[in-house]
Image (cartoon, rainbow, N blue to C red; front, side, top):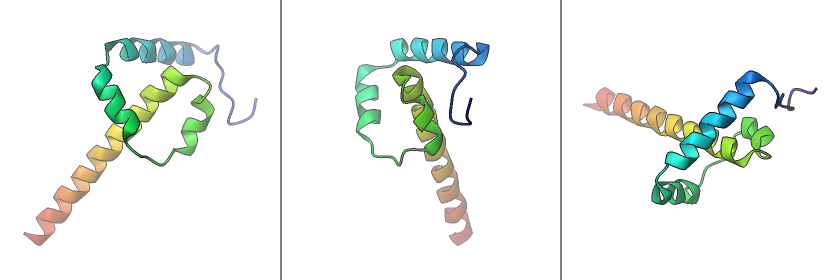
Amino acid sequence: MSAGDLDTNSSLFVLAYRLAGSLEEAVNPTTAKEVDSESMLLDDRLVSLRQHPTLHKQVEGALKARSIKRLESELLQEHGKFH
């Protein structure tokens, strides 16, 4: 198995896939469309999840949320430096 391959039989993968499915069912359809329409550079780590669309979507959403929080934090820190 190469570094890019996923062990789809591992308990971690199975659990992550089930969680992604549950989150997919619980998400507001409007929110999902808004998230899909946002542009984002594809993280290289997501490439191996493309064959698992539900899991890919949830991981991508988490990465976007984390990126937004990080940007917000950096902006607040910059704002504090100048005031």
